[in-house]
Image (cartoon, rainbow, N blue to C red):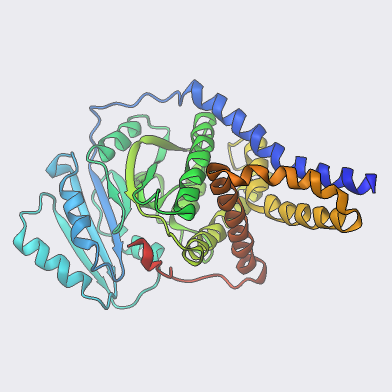
Length: 378
């Protein structure tokens, strides 16, 4: 019995110590800074690609948000690629442009069928004229100065890509949105630390910018995302890809368990694919990231979910053999009576469940296709 108890305690330690160690390391690196000096006067030409599919509810607000961006009118090109919307998205865009003195030149492209965001981005890429390529979603909204703050880092020629920080509009709605807020806060510290070391491979396509002459096209292989996949290719080619917290965008989070799992399991598939790719490239000595960064991200996205299952099973076995151990394991659950630890617990459990769901299509080679929209986020 003592041996089983020790095994259970060892599993608990293996589950929680690595995140604490990696977080402390990244926090230390974050405090040292990026060692990249942004140039506020650097204003290259930018082409922003916005991909749409049934975005009639939000597209006018998105165009208004773009209108408010603080950037020279002759240096920002907008390319909107509509992937066969059936709700009149493109028609609403045309009506908006007809009655509005839109500040920036805009190109409208209509696809005959929906083939996914990466494909749409590559269609739009053929029409760009900017030195920097920006991507954004129709339902995400940038701060007025977000573009200026993001492009300022491209003054350093070593920078190949920049991503920004999300602020959740409905973060206080319920336990799921608050949990996503905690998740973002935790991982933004990790992304900041990784960027200070060299690069982070985890980008958010809602606000992402890429140096045009650093890549040919967006990653479009099944199972990989346009943001993570493209960034990994850039890092393997020697560019730094960094997280810039002062470049802020706003979005909503799913507030139901089903919506949260739908969104995060899809993202998890892309994240896990990216982690496996970084491991492969590192083994081939084609990735300038420390082994520790590769290992800990492998731990977070692949090892941790199954370790959590092992912890739950072993704890159950120990309790089944000797119910007196309930006092010990029950003591560990007391913090869940408090709101913040309970939110963290729900976020942790649902995130790991989503990772397991995301691993399934990779193991079965049943890669997902185009995104399924989470309507409650709109």
